[in-house]
Structures are given as C-alpha cells and as structure tokens.
Length: 229
Image 1: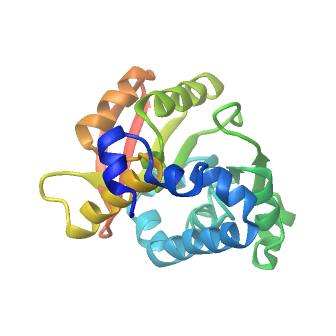
Image 2 (image 1 turned 30 degrees about the vertical axis):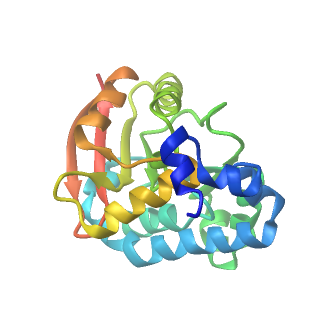
C-alpha cells in the first residue's frame, strides 16, 4: 500500500515495486504465505459460500461444473454438497494448489466417489472440456480485460454450450465502503479492479457470450451469468 501512489501514477502494481516480482510469483516462492493465502480464500468460501451457492439454483441443473482458480476446493465442494444432482465438479488451479486440495482429508469422500476431480495447470493455457457451467469466485478482478476475454474464449472453444457463472464483487455508484476499499487494494497489489455490470457485459460480448443477469446473493458478491451468444 506504500506504493499506491506509484500504482496510480504508472498503472503498474505497487506490489511489484515493493517486492520486485508479481504477487503470484511471490506466493510461488513463499509456500508459507501461499498456504496462508489459500486458507484465507477458503475462509471466504466457508463464510459466504453457502449463501452464494444457494442463491444460484442453475448450478443444480448442471451435470459437470468447473471452478476456474478453485483453490483448495471449498467453493466447488459447497456446490456439490448443496446440489447432489451435479455429478462431477472439477477444480482448475496451479499444480501446487491442487496438491493441497488433494491432501484435505474432508474431501476424500467426494474424491473417492468421483464427484470431485482436478485439472492442474494454467487455465489461461488450457481448460477442461465437457463442462456445463464454468464458474469463478473472487478472481476476475485480478485480470485485465484482454486476459479475461482470452480465458472466456478458451472456455467458449472448449465447451461451446456451457454457461459462465462468476461469483464476483460488482462495482457501482452505490457500492459499499468495503467494495471501494477492496478495489483500491486490488489496484495496489496487482493493478486489478472491480468491474461494473456494463463492463462485464462488454468483456463477455467480446468473447462470444451474452450477459443474461446479475443475481444478488445477500452477500457482497453477485453471480454474473452469461450464456453463449
């Protein structure tokens, strides 16, 4: 945050000036901090996940759901638990994160039954096919429009009929103080930013999707639902 002025002046992340590398590379080099980061993301899912998932019943209409950047599986596990009709969920994340997820004893029943699967790797390079719903939670603010469009196009090519349901913080003139502070934090750490509904509609359109609706969840998050155009 001490480099926030530089971020505002140059458009580059203050984090990179402070640590001489980007956040994700730094976490890769500091496994203790990375574990703490993943634990924090799991806490987010444990706190708000049930309400978010319950608010979007179309999850229950899908056979296969893929969680891009799904971390150690907390959000996807909530989907699988809430909607037994979902036959399989796929966590897509870096190999080191997937290893942490596989090591979770509480996930063993879902893994052994075949309902929880993993797709380790860089989802900007490859995503699983045969998916009914691609989802994300609290990560699209990390990427530029060009990166997000690239990922959406990859999903569109891999599973042409799949929906995209992003559980994200949405910017607006009426945004809470929490969202405004979060927006500043993302700008300082990774030159990220929160998007408005119109901005999401634009990036989805560039990738061949049509934004259908933004579903409130009774939390700071909303579900941004898009379908192939």
